[in-house]
Image (cartoon, rainbow, N blue to C red; front, top):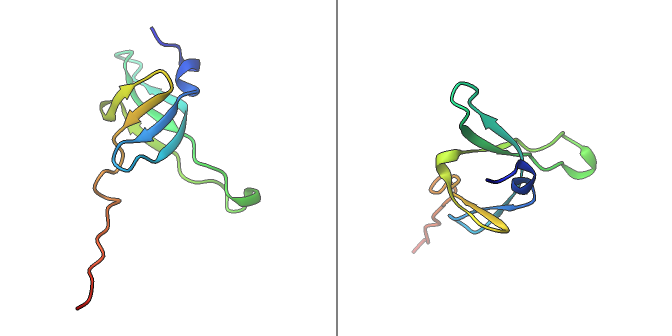
Length: 89
């Protein structure tokens, strides 16, 4: 059994690029089934609070690959973030 408070202190890391996405701020639970549908990582605040904050990151439960002692490994936008730069001849 894992408590929500234990989830919130773990770093969430994207396996596609090794980048830390943040920490879990909320959990989306289906009230009919009692199952966790997704975890939500709160968006970071902008400089001095200008322009609000970044969008929340929603990770579907199926995209959580491994929950470790200190880290949660997830798959997030694996191919959408990859850009190729063509060299000119």
